[in-house]
Image (tube, rainbow, N blue to C red):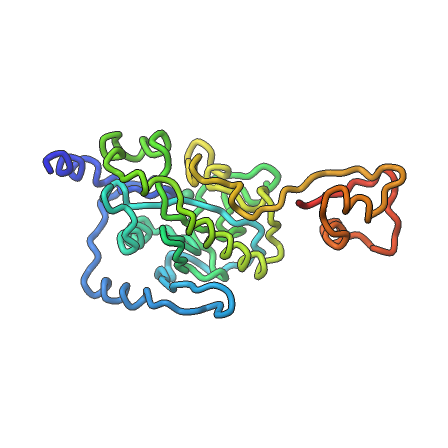
Length: 284
Ligand SMILES: [Zn+2]
């Protein structure tokens, strides 16, 4: 108990936010806000035929109307481990972290795969901060405006978390609470399917579905080494140069994809023959 009191005193202010890195003493949630929060967690079937989502909207001042087309999805982790290492995933606590730091995300995925909508997709959430992505110079320091942010309730490796919390506190966290759950991967894939349907400008590959650390290396570690990208339904794109004797059918057979997929992905005219030396991108 004395150990925990010590940490509460000296490290409480660090309030773990995988994404913010800011520090301030969090204000307690007033009673009337708690009631409003409870009401806000009402489950709705926003996409009835597809995926149940809990609406848990953050106040509109933590977002603003979107004007650019969305090209990216950014994955993060967040928890309340610094304040409550034994109970790091209380949704109300994490909600309070967003409020305290004035940040936001469009979605949050809980440990049992429950999906919360914090900010509607037509609004820009404040999750990425400053950074840049190779190949997207126009996104530099503006990734919020081009992306949908998804927070996973998760905790990274000790090395990833030590900048935010002391080792002894990290060691209080139950092993089952470190990393990601199967249910979270399932929900993330379902959510990505829905998002990509609504935003065809987001390509289903690792250039467009990215982690916070790829945009802000050195500043951010989330979603971290424990996030298994191979479990996300992302297309790997291979480059192929058309050879003599090739046909669309032969290439499709070679890579085990449909001709339609190649046509669509390369914006080909199916009535025009391929040319030797032509570069194709083959999604797999
Ligand atoms: Zn983040």
